[in-house]
Image (tube, rainbow, N blue to C red; front, side, top):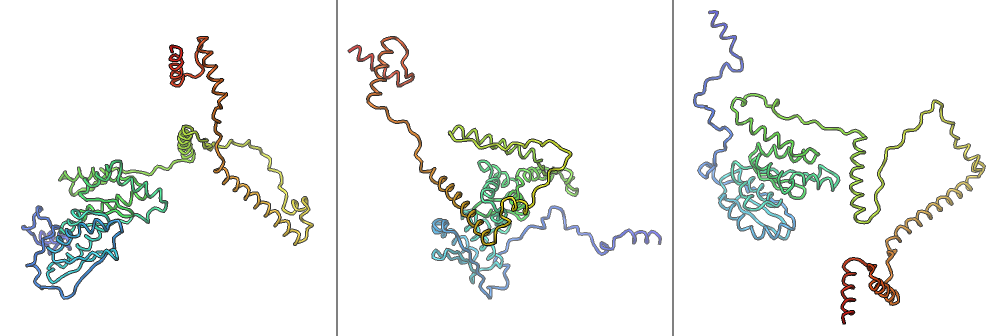
Length: 388
């Protein structure tokens, strides 16, 4: 009797009604989606027509016009009708009486979205498969600065597309970076990983860190012993490095120096490097008291002026400043129209003098004043004249 009581206590309340399931083995994939055929649709045709439409950019018009026959052929096999409107720049899909799969209209909607975002027809047709999903990641509003946005978007692609290829191999997804969006096609689990990589890259976290993490997870998944354990101890922990003010200044000066070298090579004036200000000598005495505004007005005599005289004086000073700034801007604009200093072409007399000096140096046996190719050519001409 006591043994029965011990067994009753040992069983968890949540699991007391559970029974063994010998037919449920580990080799069964519970996430597998069974194919939906026309025989599975026992309800017959749909009562209402479902339709979706999407716009496409102008540069995709030519390609879509050429490839629309392939799109129509792929959708007809599933009982979906499609329309390409070149006047309004839109694509639409709708169900027909031949449609038997209730979910295929959503797949067709994803297909025209991918076509609008620059995906080729051969790749976009794969979205109609049950085990394939898609995600269009919007990256245009993550970064405000245009230059920074372009650099970070290029970071997703990598040099010669190496980073993008690594992401595709590790996640088994198709990734296309186009404009302000990133189109991804693949299994549901991989879509989540690609979205994380892309958004982190736009938030200034390099994709290489996520790629390393995925490579480690890929190796850990091969070990069946670690299937029920946490992988946190194996994954790398990356910390953000905060630079000090001196390190930031040093890096900035290095960039300026490299730019100055390029400017010197181009014959331009170098940019001034910001140097660290010298430390002031400490004095224990407090600084002298600064004069008040009223004291300054008393010294200049402004304190005794009447209000209308003060306004007139302020207006005169303001106009003077405006004139100075106008002259300065005019001079800056006029600099672009100043002709550069050029050497004047030698006159006939100068050419004769130079020729005479050259011949005299040749007769004396001295080296000619002009060395190089030009001098050699002239030397040959002189020799030819002497021989003749």
